[in-house]
Image (cartoon, rainbow, N blue to C red; front, side, top):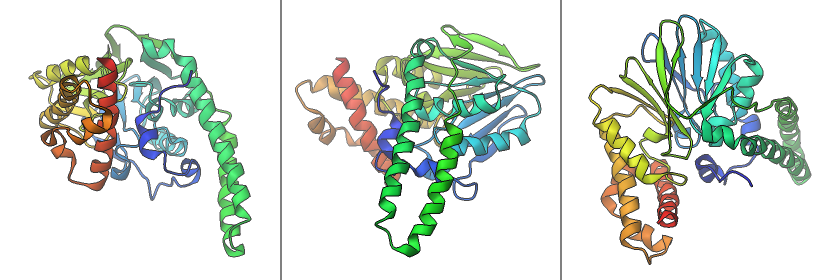
Length: 339
């Protein structure tokens, strides 16, 4: 059994598989580091990748540091390793994967290679199914290898003037792939089935398990309950394709009504506030209600007649429009199959 097609794969499946092997450079795909407090740094993906790849969060105490999530772009993670080594004031003790999607989990293989003493933390359900994600890593690398072979075959069809340039790119891709084939996704050292407090040295945070965006989500509550690192649970445009939709909606209501919470760090895109969380909630509620009220309609019909007000916030930019329609389709299918 292979893992489900993830959100990143749905958006990026039309891209060449080799894209992650040699397009990432610091100049054209640099993450943005934001210091949100004395202890928390938000590492945000470029805006054009806001639905395709995950943000990261670095939290540092006086004794230990913790990193939340790792991109599915191995070249980007290797660049992050370089930047982390410049930013870390203490040992990196923990790696937290907020859920199993490849744009949050698979890059942990890179992090584990460079920080072998850091303990990987996942939801208990992710730990139980971990062999699936190890196989997903193997499949991804095999896909890269096949793409390189195919690209070499296509070289012969290019003009001579272009062949040298692309041969050099493929040589670099092969070098990277050879290095990545030495990385391993090691099972978690800690699995979370109930809320757990971690002390990073004069700075504590609470990791909690949920079934919302997936059946194995983790969130982190920091700054004495003021800051929530929520992963994809609190994304402005939520991906519902694998969601436990009713539980997810109840969790968002809880966050919206929590007067202590004031800072929300999502898995994708910019920081969100309670206004944006309400838009996320409206989108998810509209999906479940629309599927419930039209049990005989197929997905195409459901999508065509979906309430426009629930989609309106996501119809301002081309990438938002494209992504929202893909996410809506996945969410309606999930809601219909869950009835």
